[in-house]
Image 1: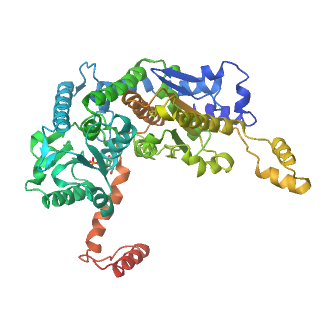
Image 2 (image 1 turned 30 degrees about the vertical axis):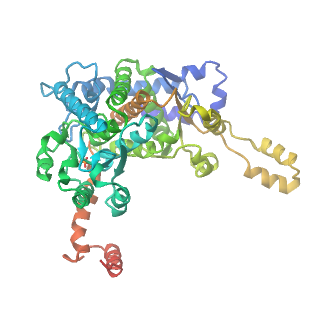
Image 3 (image 1 turned 90 degrees about the vertical axis):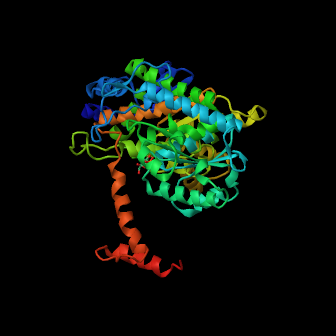
Length: 535
Ligand code: F6P
């Protein structure tokens, strides 16, 4: 299958993406339109043969049965023996979803109802701090317990009508001290978001926040909430069960924004809009489950990704939201995609024979245009770009800004595809008054190879529902890529070794253990740090 795809790619060496548009129906054919989203992948070199071969690959890898197994609650996270059911958290129209024969939906509904009730109490002032109604919420978490809440809260800024939300993740004291500086402990709610409730960064920040609050109020624990699946540990920390919102081990950290981990978002935008966000996710689930593979948005997004990384060999992909409020989406997708599919062993323990998932990176447009787009247009590596933009913004008085934003987004994908030939560059230089060798030299710097692939996702407006659809789209994309590569997208053993070594180095830094046995570089670095530390 891969050989067939590679030989199709090899056969395209002299083909231009632009020439594929001789087929007047190409744009429509190589796009998927679903529930207010348009995903256009026509500015790629995928043609009818490539498309058919990619679909064959998906079918041969058992995508459909694997997808159904996920939605049904089978333990598809085989290395951890767990089901993968973040989709159940947004299953609002709600049939039963069983894990080992037990329906998880009643528990999900009950927790959602408790979250809703708590959010309403906080937002109305019925739940208050020692100094009065809650004005600020500090979410302490990291990875999936941080990126989802932070990214979505920023994305849905126009819908905020609750307390201000702040997000602390890094164990670097600069993060928490910066966040707490101007807050009133008497009117702050601290959320400790940690699935395991053991993560060192989160627990360190949680204790620092507790100390900070204890300096301002008599019973600081009253203003703490926990979001976790480790109820024994939340109790040990001193948070009573009524302020703990739990979830099953079948929700992976980077897939957890749909449940209790989304509490800060719910506090910011209210329960109703949070439920709109869930219904967007559910809408995408429905589409993913029912649309034929060829018209299935997450499947097509995944196949384009596989085509560019595994078949064409492009090592990275850029996510470029032309939406300032999606500024943290690239970071969110880095965890979602790279923690899920950055692996070298297949589900069955065998080494992968080809590349795993690509490096994912990006920045919102238009900012990126004035930073790294130079390389995307003229560098020697090809970077497939994933653009996204809303038809309209949230600033009715600034529609001219939005038109400029959209124009820039569309212009970039067009420029990447068209490029500029040497002939055209020479004509430009001649018109600017250059001649002879000088003209030639100047012209060469102004050539754009073009033929660089991109996709564009367009949506009407970044509402809670659309955001839910977009996140679920990417989640399923990661799943499809994982299934086709034979990877378990739901474990993350690769993060463990660094954690273990950091634990062992801590006593060395505290002067309670020696660096004996460490390599020369690590010893040198430790010694420099120790000789430059006053505290
Ligand atoms: O270290 C990686 C990781 O386990 C992520 O998968 C997870 O999102 C993050 O740490 C935080 O974990 P927890 O929610 O258990 O604190």
